[in-house]
Amino acid sequence: MQITNDISFQTNKRDVFETLDANSVFSRFIDLLIFAISIGIVHDQRQKPTGEDKIEVARNTLVQPNLKRSLDFLFQTAILTTSDIKEKFDEDTLMRLAFDDEYEEEGFNKVNFLLEFAPYGIDVIDQKILDRDPINTLMNISEYFEELFDDQGIKDEVIQDIIAPETK
Image (cartoon, rainbow, N blue to C red):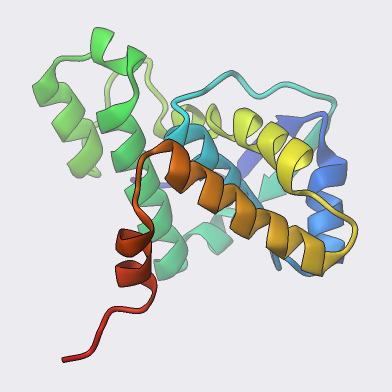
């Protein structure tokens, strides 16, 4: 996914960004935005970002290889798994959108599509994760993931294999 402009995200929850930035849980707004987008994708929940405040991320930040890879992966996951997008595009178009950086579909903006997952994620962060104390916030993130894994039916053994695989 090529990003040629700054990202501008409208929200009514700038305080969530500022609180997590102030207590150093996320060192940059883009990290929190990626986390929020991830939550929205997992729950297949998206909506147009609205609000009075703008969160802005400069495009020169977004060209960093690790961020570009993360955003590409999130976009690929979202475009291939979102339930209602399959009604708009055929499988070939979805594959081209996901894996061909040069391919554009008229009237479809990849970045805006991805940002539509953030409002739900920010709401989840605000309601289930955010705490003024960074230690509590990190514990809440851990509890959120445990709850998510339980809801998805992922067994503890699988999680342990991911976290600390046995060495042979």
